Structure formats: C-alpha cells, structure tokens
Image 1 (tube, helix red, strand yellow):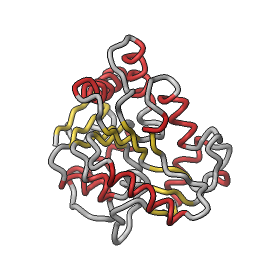
Image 2 (tube, helix red, strand yellow):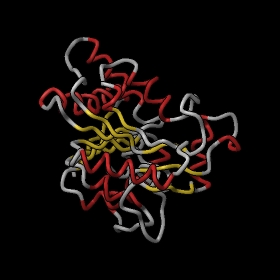
Image 3 (cartoon, helix red, strand yellow):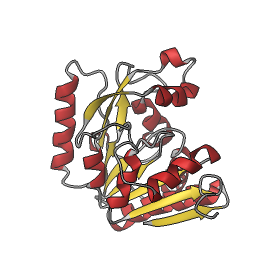
Image 4 (cartoon, helix red, strand yellow):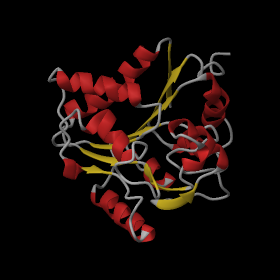
Length: 243
C-alpha cells in the first residue's frame, strides 16, 4: 500500500488525474471503475484539462460506476448519471455504449444487479478502481455490516450516510433511502485501487481503515488485503499518519 500526502488540493487532484490518464495513455482499452461524490470532482476537472490538450483519449476505454441511487430520475441533478455527465462524460470522448452505471429506476432491481454483474464479468477485470471513503468506512455504498455482499446489490443507506449526502439535496428528506452498489468482492478484483480521501473529518476513519483490524464493520479495511492500493490524502485527512 502506497500512501501519499499532498500539501495542496491542486497537487492531489493532479496526482490522481495523472495516475488515471497515464493508465489510459499506455492502455487505451483500459477498464476504469469510477466514483462520484465531492472527492473526485477536482480529479475529473484535471482529466478534462488533459483531454482538451489532446494528451489522452477515452474513445476505446470502458467505465463502470460504483453505484447509483434508487428511485430518482437519471436526469435529476443529484443522480450519478447526471453527475458523471456534468463532471466527465460531457467533456471527454468516452463512447456512450462503453460507460456503465447501475439503473436505479429498473422495474426489477434484483435483475438489474444481475445484469450489471454480468457486464462486469464480461469485462473480465477492472484495471483501476477509483474510490472515496465514507465517514463510517463505506466504499461504494457498501455500508458497515456483519457480512458484506460480493457482487452488485441493493443496499439500505445508513442514517449517517444519508446525512452526509444531504448537503447535495435541499433536505435530508430528499436523499434516497436505498442505492445499488458494486460489491466489495468486485472492488477487490480490480488490478489497482486508487483511494482518495480529503478533510480533517476523515482523518480517523482513513487511519482506522488502513491500519486497524480488517473487519466488515469498516468495509474500507478490506483494502488492506489488496496487493496494489495507492492512497492519496490531503494534509488534514493524513494527519494521523504523520503524528
């Protein structure tokens, strides 16, 4: 596990974007696992800048998003379909048929999970999986539990997760109660995992996840079992590693 701490947001974003674009430059047909939320926004901005300079193309790459809310329209500004278009897909040259996000409005959600799992199986292996980290240690929407599901599945979001995401909505009442998420087993199959964490409020959980006991009660702790994890921290989130 390679843990890197950056003094500035700009340096962190450039480093994260550089890892992703570097992979696609050397492997144009790379399969990328993508994340949403506040953490990757600056990284996506840097990727777009690199693409606009003509330095990277995504036309042969494939992407799989980690998750999507259940029950809000794809064109809702806080759906992850809309997020990905706003921050990345509308600004680079991914082929639309090569970008994949779970359908949180499917009439049969269990069947949708099976469909998504089959797409992932057909892709063989994700080359790089981008992750953020929830305050309770969740990755994707894999919440702390006595056991974790390996494949894509429906999850009831914890109260603390909905509260953390309420900042993106008008009120917590608008935050969906359920989501579809890629499972931890699928995440851990990726060749490389890029975990990005920001902010003093994440310092304790990222330290616990990367140095504490491996337990399903902190899903991110299972990253300790992966052979190739790169962690990008800002000084606030990384303060306990430098203590």
